Every structure is written in C-alpha cells, then in structure tokens.
Length: 529
Image (tube, one colour):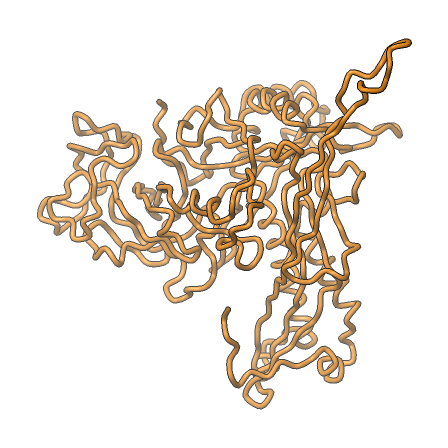
C-alpha cells in the first residue's frame, strides 16, 4: 500500500463547495458518469437483469464497500424426462444446476494538480472542477471499457475461437486473419457455447435479434477489403454515393451478424490503441550491441508509472487491488488467482519493433519481464552474434531463422546494416522487408506469436456477456499543497466488472475471436506455415 505524502492536505467535498459554490456533488457525479459513458463503447449495450443486453448492470448496491464481492447466481435449463399421459411424474421431475460467481468492486481514483499560475494563464475554463471534468471523465470511460476488454480477453474459459480450424494462439500464421467467412463459421461455435442473440434494431416495430461482432479498427480493414464484402456492398447496398457502404463507410450486417467497429486514436505520451489490438511506442532506442540492462521496451524516458505495456503479454493485469496474490479459488476455471497469474507470467512472448524508416526487428521477453510500464527484452533476432554486447542476440528466435543473412550487427560489433532478409541459405526472413537489430526512438512495438502473426482479438457479444456493478455516486475530491498555491481535483468511484459464468464453469454469452492481422501502415512479415 503506497503511503501518502506526510505534508499532504486533502480537502473535503464541503471545503470544495465552500471554495466554489457551483460544485454540486450530484451534478458532478452525473456529468462525470455521462462523460465517461460517451467514450465507453459498451455503455450503449448495458441493461438490467433480464434485459437481454450483453452487459448486465447492478446499481442497487449502495451498501457495498470497496473490496466487497457482488454475487450473481445463474441457473441451467431444466433437464429431466417429465411424464406423458398417465405416467407418474414423481421421480421424473426436472432438475436444474445452480452456480454463483462474483464481481469484486473496488475504488478507482484519479486526479491531477495545477498551480494558481497555470490556472491563471492557461485558462483551464472555470476552475479546477471544469478542467478535471473535461479531461478525466473521458479517461474514466476508457478505463472502464479497457478493463472490460481485458477481462473478456483474459478470463474466458472454453470460449476462444480461432480461424481456419486453428486451436491455439501459437499456431496462427499469415493466413489466419479475420474474414467474413470466418465470422460466419464462428457463429455456430458461439451458439454451441451458449451464445444468444441480442436485440440490435427494430424494423417496422418488430425486434431484430442478431449476434454482434465487436472489431478493433486495425482488424476491420481485412473485412472491408475482402472481395466478398466489397461485392455484397456493391450489389446489395443502395445506389447512392451517400447511402452505399462503399462510399459512406457504414458497416453492413454479414449473414445476420451485426458488425461494430471500435476506432482508436493514439494519444501522445499515453497507452496506444486498444487491448484487443495493442501496440506501443518506443521512447529510447537500443540495439543488440547495447548493454543488456538498456534493452528495454518503454514508451517514456522518465515516466515509470503509466501502464504503457499493460495490454502486452506477461503483465499481471488486475481488476481489483491485491487480486494477483489472492489464493481464493474464484479465478477462471475455479483455480486460485495466483495460479491464473502464474500462467500469464511464466510464458514467453514475442513482438515486432517497426522503426520510423520501416525496417523491422523481432524480439522476445519473459512474462516476468513486463511490469506494465516497460518490458525487459530477453532475446533479439540477429544473424551474426560474434560481438553482441548485450549477449541477447540469437540467429533463431521463435520460428524465424536469420542464419547467413547480411543485416544486423556486423562481426566486429561496430556497425549495423539494414537490408532485406532471406539471403542466407537457411534464412526464412522475408526478402520483402528490411530487417534490423537496432531500434530507434519513435518505433512501434506490436505483439505477435512465434510466427510473427500479429496478435488481435474480436468479440462476439450476446445476451449476458458480462456484469458491471456501480456503487453509489462518483465523488469529487481535492488536494492542496504549498499553502494552497497548488490546487488539485479529481474523483473517486467504486465499480467492478466480470464475465458471466455458466453452471459448468465456462464463460458464456460471448466468444473471443483470436486471429492474426496487420496494423495498416505498420505491416510486418509473417510466416505462412
């Protein structure tokens, strides 16, 4: 537990109201929650129990406290023979199974500080309260949405679907991208796992039920660019520049499946992209000739707290405080949370580094090497490692072989060469790409598997995908330093999220489509077998 600064003075809500009479707690709470919902894609699919919506919301838990577990009980369909005619019913009654699962709620707090000089000359717009609302409410919405995405991605049990009959993430290759036919084939698998369609639209007063596939913008390109989708839009869409999907950009339903595109914008000096299609920026360059301690994937030279790498493999992502050290048998599959996180940290992960000049490099790291803020690299693909100062250079990494290639660090360890791969007799590094083992500041970091297939996920959402629990109102908090010359403001809120679980212990209502892909403009080589 982090200690507060010995000289910190935290003002109460009453003090904030006294300083600024326009600060009214209830109005603040509504504005914050409304602003957060405006950037949370999933908020539009929330509903109460029995609503048939993907995300079931509980708000009637004002007495809950941070760290409490909100219980949900599910029931299987009745099973049993019943009785026909004069057959006795006694002994032939139906029976059901019950299972209770929990959603732990915890505090989430955020704030920032200004000096009076900044407030005076930066014109934040109406005091600390307004400045906090404008910037933090959207961050809160992104936090809730991304927490949910990580929960659906990591906590699923028995509900991951791979394209082309693949069975694991490690087996994905260049051909295993998201396609219209892949979505069509995934829907029966999703239904086998208990997936039920949601009410998406109403036509002429009648509800229209369909599953919905939630797709990150990096992955939707393979759908929009597919010939089958283009032909459907060409011949099935309206004959108009404004209405035809090929011109308007509107997504067509595909074989009765609704498609939803999540558009992500990379902010400066913050987490990039989306947990379902993660990427990050490299702030400090290094190479295979650097000292081993300098071979670090980090997005800010001095910021050691922002979780830039939290969506990359290996990080112990938590949904409440202390979760990773909990021995409670409530983790997916009925195991202890320590066991759940051990499976994450014990694996080896791979990633591409794409330099600003387009040259690519291939690296790996152990799960224990990702602390959420930065990643310690444990291997770098490099053909000749005679003089690699880091001792991390390897000619074979994952399923890539660079032996005999002329790119990378030279034998003397004095210079790098950036040229096409595939020169060596046994090399399988693509000749269509320029390779390197030297990485520049401003490079992109993209996670992948041992084949170089970029790791992406899409979600098939149906009824009762997950639960969300909101406790009470969001509260305004304040903090003052240096005799009130430094004035801070922020919020505290209590919420929790978790996937729904069936009586057999499997997550239900949704499926994870785990597929390969490319980030447009950041294409990388991928092995095809």
